[in-house]
Image (cartoon, rainbow, N blue to C red; front, side, top):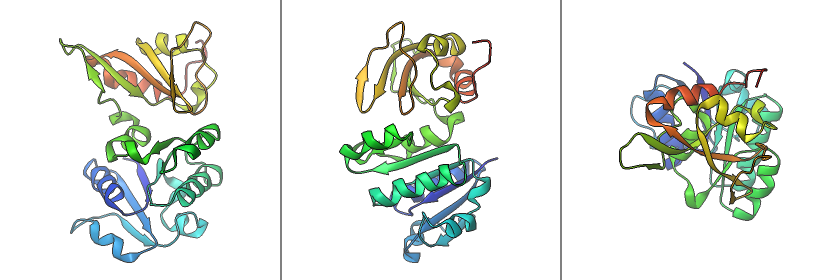
Length: 223
């Protein structure tokens, strides 16, 4: 199982910690206020670290160097984005996500390649979609028969620059639309997946796990 580091032990942070631990993963959660850890259930087995989430030594205490993913879900935009950048740029954590309250800032951070979720859309489920690809496909819409599922996909960073047609071919899916800088766009024949894009695709429900595994890995060279 993987190791996850969470910054912020509010409602969302505590829910994430419990969900990840229940899935068999190891968890370290950071908060400046030791009292915040009271939100964690009795018997929580993860590490509780009091400190500033963007401080390198604090992150090392959380074992950030072996982390599969990092989620910054504190109440401060600046702290969240700074911590996320430190996790990615200093410790090379591949899967990161930051909670953002100011939608005007979200576009800037998307340009920096930092996945964000605006507070109005924020939930533990949304962050899990970004840091836990193997459980990401839950679906936003099912057609009446239940066979087809419209869902948001998580892609490995090496898909950046690939044509949407390459994604469709690899995952046996149909890309319905992209969200780019907070706005929906219909892909054309020359559209490529860019850093910060969110891909929404129609897939066969029974193939959801296979699609998630394919796209969370780097693309094959022959594509």
